Each structure stands twice: as C-alpha cells, then as structure tokens.
Length: 245
Image 1 (tube, rainbow, N blue to C red):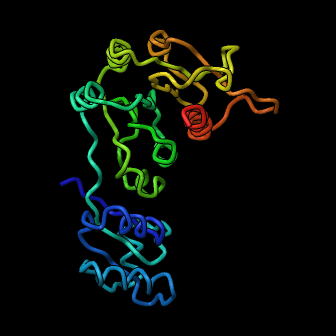
Image 2: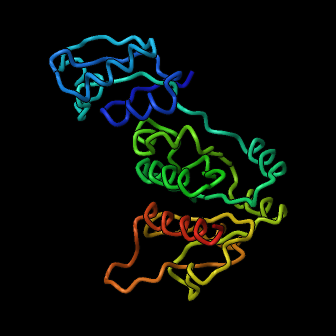
Image 3: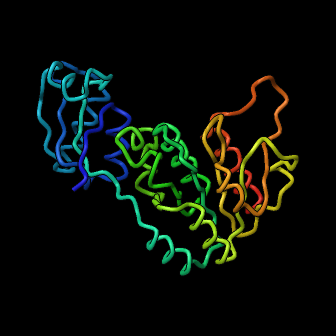
C-alpha cells in the first residue's frame, strides 16, 4: 500500500469528495473550533472514517511544521500506471485520443496543476518519464484537488520510444516551444493528439523534440520570456478542448 499523509482543509475535503475509501485515518486539532472543521468532522462520522483528536504540536511534527490547518489524513495515494497499461488503453480507445506528455517536469505543483486542468479539459491521461520527473505525491494530490484520482498517469522508461509507438497508433505529437513560428491557436487540434510540454527554461529535450510532428507556441506580447509550464499547458489543453467542442 502506497500510503502517505496529506494535510489542510482543502486537501482533506478533496480526498473525502473523490476518494473517501482511500482514507485510513484522520487527526484533528482538538483546540480548533470553526465551521469548516465541524463540517469535516460531520462528514467523517457519516462515512465511518475514524479520526483522533490531537494537539497542535503532534500535527506540526507529522507535517514537518507545514501549514496543516488543524487536520492531517493518512491516505492511499493513486497508482501510477505502466507503459503496458498505456498501450492497452490506447489500442482500445473509441474516442479521439488526447494525451499530455510532460518531459521531465519535476515540480509536484506543476504536475498537480496539470492534472487539475487535464481533468477539466477532457485529457485521457498524462504521460511522465520514470527518471527526473515528479510522481504522485501528497503535494501533487493536494494541488490536483481530486484530479489525481480521475486522470490516469502513465510512467514510461524511454519517452522517445513511447513517442514513436504513439505515432504508429496514428496519434500526432505536438511539441510546445518558443522556437517556432506557428501559433497553437492556428493549428488543427481536432486530430488524435499528444501535447508535449518540457520544463521551464530547458523546454523539451532534443530527442523528444525530434519525435514531434509539429511545434507550436503561445503568442506573447509582454516582456516575460516564458510561462509557467502548468499555465502554458492549461492554455493549450483548453485550445484543444475549444476546437473539439
């Protein structure tokens, strides 16, 4: 069992809403008395999830002094799926495929934010690399606000090889980069598609970019050189969503 601790009112509420059966135990600050905590305690009781009144020092220790807002929960984290599972899903799809590939994105906040937007935009799954990438962590689950349970994450060993296989399945690979002239808003995104995002600064790796069928950028008129990867991914995912609607 891949269990870990999450904390904070919003994170625990999201776990209750989307995966209550994955919560093993909850610890609550006995000194905190407010409507949000009372509502959570009522929900825990209705779902027959045990919780233990605790003092703040214990909760501080459990969360390494982070802002837990008086509540900590032990949960089973969502599983990361294998490359074989990805292949099974792709070959059995009836919808027009839409995947997000994150090329060595290491910040769990970015993965969590991408998961949240991917859920809203109808992405069929997120593909990550085994090395130098964030996996499913409590931070990812907290930022994702339930989307880590609803959007599958597939971990692959060799991303270039996976990209080649996706192309064999007639899925077009679209890479996001600033070094191109084509705007994402002028591209046809109704085709079977995998959107590839790289890290901030470094971008997509050379071997990954070589697998792309075409490259796009987000037009920018300000002074900043690039957007946060989760923000850029969100803009592009919603452009796909808009075109397909």
